[in-house]
Amino acid sequence: MSMQQVPAHRRVIIGVDTHKYVHVAFAIDELGAALTSRSFVADSGGYSELIDWAVAFGGKLTFGIEGTGSYGAGLASAVRRRDIGTIEVVRTDRRDRRLRGKSDTIDAENAARAVLAGQATAIPKTADGAVEMIRHVKVAKDIAVKARTAAMISLKQVIVNAPPELREELQPLSKMALINRCAALRPGQVTTILASSKYTLRAIARRWQHLNEEILGHEKVLTQLTTQAAPDLTAAFAVGPDTAAEMLIVAGDNPERIRSEPAFAKLCGVAPIPASSGMTTRHRLNRGGHRQANAALYRVVIVRMQHHEPTKAYVVRRTAEGKTKAEIIRCLKRLLARELWAAMQPLRDARRALPEAA
Image: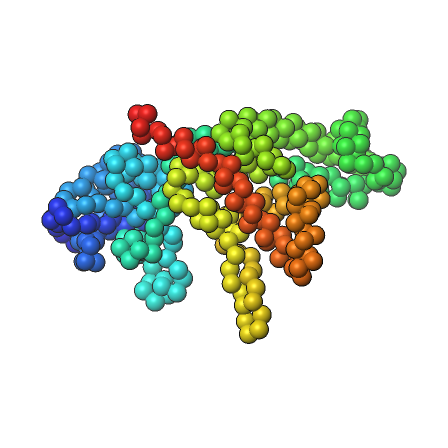
């Protein structure tokens, strides 16, 4: 397609399908007319070239970018620095792909039309502050936790197949006693099955110890960062650094993009959805949203149901009203999301004050 000029008062929407090495952009005007499309290298120079190409249309620009949390993060940041509106676009559904086919250009056009139709409205996270640091540390911790769990599973599997004299000595031990005992094994020369079993158990146990120390270090950093970012959040009952980190990650470094507390609850997957039929009137749990945040809310609710007096009283009252345990947990998760959203109010206020301070 050839380049076309657009009147200054007319809106131009640039849909971008992002990839690791190349971004494909497709431009349409506010009437839905296709203008042109082009590919750009996915680096700093390519971002500038893409934005300059879009600005040359002359209209009021809006970008609709796929993958703003992955391959499109760099472009979204570059567009934001140029003070141009940016909308996050989710991938086209499979039904549309079956009907229209799939190509990078088609995906870019779909992104632009999703913005034009109002189907895509989400403002992408800025990922340029304390919350992004928290997310990085959380990723490192989660990977280490998975590796530590795998190490323990492997250790116990090796014990099951170890020679009887070694297996009978180790199986009755508790977890930490088992780790310490295996880490202190002296296999000597690996010339027998017993020696090779000890060698393997010692290696796995020491790996577990190393990973455990790494996790404790990550937890200290997470505690420090989350407390600095949202002290009221970390002070809430049963909310540890992991839960606080998940809540902050959902909100992002620009929590003002979430327009209301119900919108935050929906992002956490705890907004109630009608599930009524016939004579039955009820609601069910939302299966969408950020699953890690949803799981974090669930863990806090379970702890509060056992140790938090106001929550225990709430459970008793709702049970007397005929609510099931699952329905009570759903209600508690929704109430908890409201409480934690209020605890993050200082963070939102600080963000709103930044332009004025500048």
